Image (cartoon, rainbow, N blue to C red):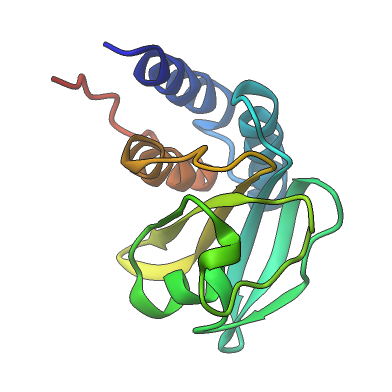
Length: 159
């Protein structure tokens, strides 16, 4: 198991311990954004965006001020809202239509969040470093993000 995988396994367990049985969504998003921001290296932003009124609207976050409204299909978050698939962007300056909410960001990973099978929003992580994120980040963050709903998420081993 790699150091990154071990870090994410621990982060998933911490998120479950913190949020399982807790059902205030704003409090859960706040605590999970803080946990991720403080436990993962090289981050300058961790943000939840809710899909509401056909756009993404900023929710609880950690980092510098973030974009408050993102149109579906615009930027990395809006692309994820359109495709419902994670995006790993090694260099945001090469991503067509990138929205620079924080000019210090150079790489990004965004994962869609689903509740009861419906698209609910996205979790967006930004880094001031290039090539910070990969498919391991996207996979684990896709498992961790729905923990905000306060339900018991399955802790599965990985090969």
